Length: 377
Image (cartoon, rainbow, N blue to C red; front, side, top):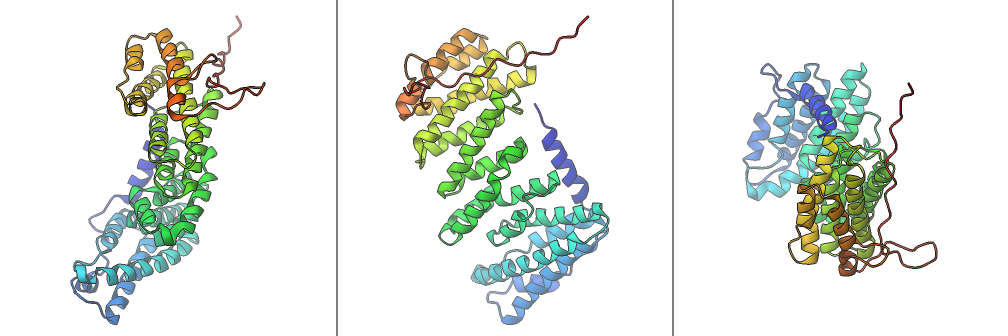
């Protein structure tokens, strides 16, 4: 299984974020007093503001980067009041002050030298932004979505696509629809040049965000993956199990353009099957195992639900390495040149038009895998 992208992101964060017992402590006495008050007064709002000002500045300015995790944890542990009666007041002031001082923090971080110090400061500010899951802070993360540094870009994407953030965005969509559209537009610019580590988060967000543009973003991701199948350059095939599941979810929950989403589901699944069959002698063991997992999981979690009865033909064909039976089931489910398959019939979609204008009942055919260069003797 290809995990290089996971390892690089995790290690980058690990070396920056490990806590150190000798780290300088942020003064928390006053903020902890405020957190225990049932009703807040004007002086309490200033204490919240001062706390975030001091904490964010320390986060940016400290040279002992091993202490940053403790500073960040100190901030996160105090983002809510302990008294439900004061929670709305407290949360509103905390959010306002967090945006104010994180904005200043990012500006300060941009000016730091050397580059390594700048990188670590921005990274930790982004991780704090991510952990706060506050839609008011989204613009701060959006500003780094196109950053040249892969790790910075990764955390910027994560900040605006995490399940907690998406849930809050959807809950306030009546007033946040413009923000949601802006995030989708920015993510659309990343799709074609992003690897599986970023696409996985973007796809989940696209499927969950409650604006029509989310469906377009999910479709773009599916199209990008299919282009890679056609070119025989696709990597980390397991990602497509998630994409197919999300397409299924979108269809089942009421897609804006159900036929278009269903067509992408059928064509992508077809490419997965065709790659597995055509690449049986050229793909490595990891690639074949990942493809097999996608085939079996999608049959169980999606195809069976679409058709209303458990489906196991693909599972048995994979277990027995019966490629002929697998392609017969491919045609049965997805269609061939003679007739529409069970899935297009059930979901009422086709694969576009043939050159002569007739309806295409078969998925597009995957080209043969590229020949490996031979060595002349």
